[in-house]
Image (cartoon, rainbow, N blue to C red; front, side, top):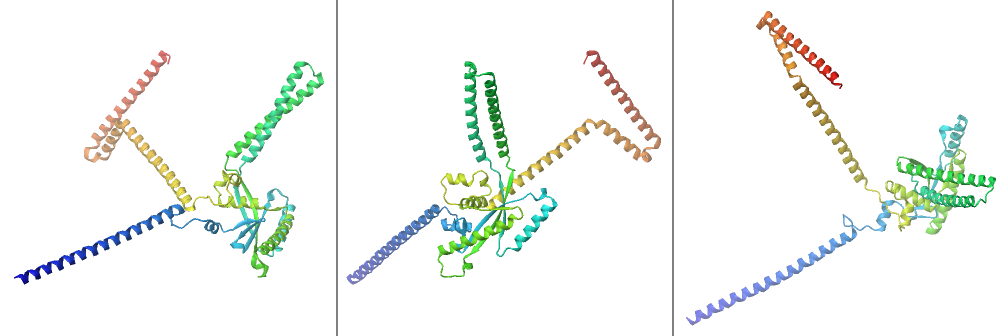
Length: 404
């Protein structure tokens, strides 16, 4: 009996030990899983914060290199646009067009022959580019207002001096006439300047006033140097020399057609690219304003083309919806008018229907009876018309007697 009790006690102790070990192992596993989950959560939070800092929907950071890759040029230097890490250089020649339509036949022939000669002399590729810009006259308006201020100050001085000298009797007759003439001339100049500013401001409000600029883009590739021992600075100097020679050659060839060409400077190239990449915003926020605001790098602010297309589509849908609504209103108004006319003329419509029924059913009713009924209806119609006419005449006579 004692032996059985010892064995039972040993079994109980073993079971308790196994349970304790299992609890310890489970606790260890739980702690490890908790730590792992906490670590993964921290990593995910870090990634979310990184995405927020990058401000990029796909999690990739926006940096200067990605912007440069999008804009397809590296920098602007020495009146050149540098592309593909110095493998391609561009120089831009701005051309002033000629009014071909106002020329005589002889002049037109000369322009055409000169342009043919220009094309025949080309030994390298060029690109013709036309840039349409909305005319922005804000700078001119500011200059006009500054000059108007000077004219106004001068006019005030002349008026004050003329009044003082006239009161003191300093002027002789001839001097007074001369001073008055100068005063009138200055006053007319002031009024004329105000009119110019007003007309210019009105013209600037019209965003449909456009100006076209014509450019010839001349490329140079580093492979044309045919020398692998040159460094980037030497290639850049060679590219500038070659592009400048080509540009001057093109300008001289075009001069025979009356077209004047000018090489764009680095600042003008910035404006050229700014308008190309920011076609909408450049109308109100020009490159000069951007540079004065502290922007020293060129970024594109133009909206995404799909967003613009979506806005245009929504606007088009709204216009169609308004047109359809107006059409529905018009149809409903017509139906309402037709119903009103039917209500107002219900007696006449019923009478007409009765006559039609009698005419169609003479065979069943009898011709004599049908004709007699139709005659009665027509007689009643005549009596009603006569009564209405008499009522109208009486009404008119009453109004006339009342002096209305």
